[in-house]
Image (tube, rainbow, N blue to C red; front, side, top):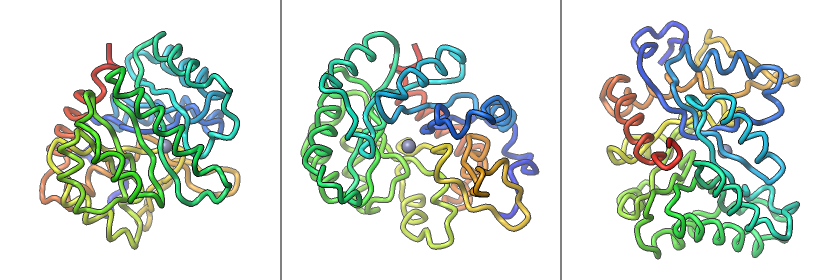
Length: 282
Ligand SMILES: [Zn+2]
């Protein structure tokens, strides 16, 4: 895969859904109009924007209000940002979800924090996961360094009534059939392009049909670009930031790995996203 997205005409006319991104992130403030424009040019017709803490819920809601045909949204507490939650954060979340079509996210577990908040993080995740079962809303899940615990939790429960998304999936390939049986989906993004992405590549090959999605995780987890491929934009430290316009690049890579065409990947992932995010689309 050496073609830059801008010169990959076979992927340009396809329709994609970015299953997981954070377009509310302040790092995108100066670039947001161009990011949205480039997404549309790349064929990304829908983006799912996940909140990370109570402080960014208004910005996520404002984005969805400003672009109702383009932005789907979810609200929740990301495991990195539980320390500044309001004492009544769960009521706040219920109220926010009652006010508009939305999912729950980004929620999850992170085993690499070392901040003494492991029990809190577990409780906050479980409360939000329980809420997603109760309200039958899809939830988007982050997991890093906590795969044993995450799989114990998800596999001990009944199948989710709306569906779950383990974004940027880096869990064991062998768990994929059991997760699918619990109505758990996975998504692939920039990590698939890393030089040592052996496990991600294996997961991309083994992912069950109609159970996987594509994501940018913008502005984080940008793809590793091929030689000569131009980055859309960088932050002030020169670091490439991710954005939805890279999705066709991920789709091409998935097509190559699975021995199919980008058109097939686009059609499958878009249909899966529309099914999973149906409660957010109304
Ligand atoms: Zn994320």
